[in-house]
Image (cartoon, rainbow, N blue to C red; front, side, top):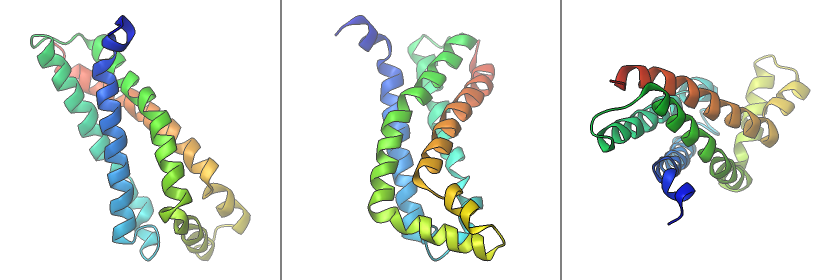
Amino acid sequence: MNAPVKKYRHEFKWAIRLSIMSVIWLLVQYISGLHSHFIEWHPAVGLSWYIFAFLVFHFSLKELKSAGGDTLEFWKGVQSVTMIAVMAVPLHLILNMVYFSTIGSVFFDSAISHFVESGWDAEEAGYYFSLPAILFRETLGIISFGFIISLISSMFLKN
């Protein structure tokens, strides 16, 4: 195995886990009706994804620390979790495109209808709840949240 692949194997493994967890979360939202019947709860309940993402990032750091002989340098932890977030983005975007183009396509119509009924402008809701806007927010959310959590978790797990 060449050096770059071996060097980032830990991060790639956890990026895959984060993406799988995200797909499971999307399916749970779909099955529970948060993308259709209970769309009014989606903004609040949808934020729960960050709890699960935090756990993925945190456990990746714990594994990194135990693999390093129970030592973890602060910047090594920050770098690792940020790299996990960056590596997860392409797969996460592809999985979101597949989901929202197939079984999750009802989400956009439901969200736009609900928010227009709540007083939003129809055009504004259409832009906000479109696939490009969702993918843009997902990208920024994963990377920024990964970086912030990397700072916090690394501070608590460092030696």
